[in-house]
Amino acid sequence: MKRLTMIFSSVLIVAIALLLGGCAASYQARGMEMKETMLVNPAILTPGKGDQALYRYQNPDMKGRRYTKILVDPVLLGKSAELDAETLGNYQKLANNAFIYLVEELRNDFQIVKSPEPETLRIQLAILDADPSSKVRNVMSSVIPIGVAISAIKGASTGKQTGVGEITAEFKVTDAMTGELLGAGIDRRVGGKDVGGMFDSWYNADAALKYWAKRVRFVLCTERGGANCVKP
Image 1 (cartoon, rainbow, N blue to C red):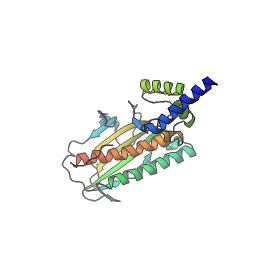
Image 2: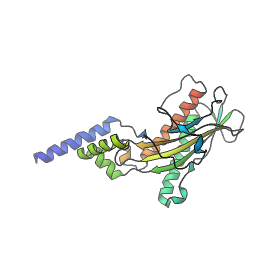
Image 3: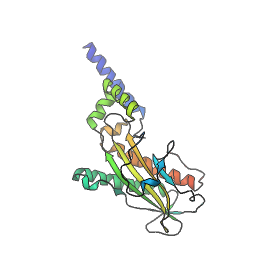
Image 4: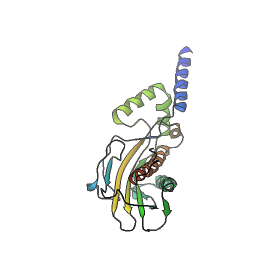
């Protein structure tokens, strides 16, 4: 009985710590294998630094240009022909959410338009790959002491903890009138031990899309010389 009480107490402490600890819902992956792209030639992409996208391109002539409007394209899906109906539905939900997140963020700094106009940026996003979290493994590796330890070890060695989801996306920014490429990137994010991931298998992927929307706004804000750019 004493041993059971001690185990229960340990589980309870870990569970409370998880609920109150505010763990991030997603983190940038340590790396990725760039198998394919949908929007740009991968040959132009170079490894990013710090918190930049894992692979990126930036047109050196972009600085100093004046853009006041932005056109957000519907989000594209990779692997759609390989997915079963249920997974495709979840991918489409992620794509719909990604579009909403981008518009919600970018409308703070730009006028949102529906067709190319002068002084307009065009942004395209493609979800190349996404994996849901395993709710059972996520819970077991978050509240059971031995599971927490194993997950921590795995996270330290591979950069991805047990049972979490992940997502890879590609971005492209062009001049809406001329089609000139201004910037592009591919990034991958993996799930953190946020409590939301225990109840929604696609929570980590969706959280990454929210982060990227804020990141796009921040990058465009800094490129245009904004004074109050908010880094996510």
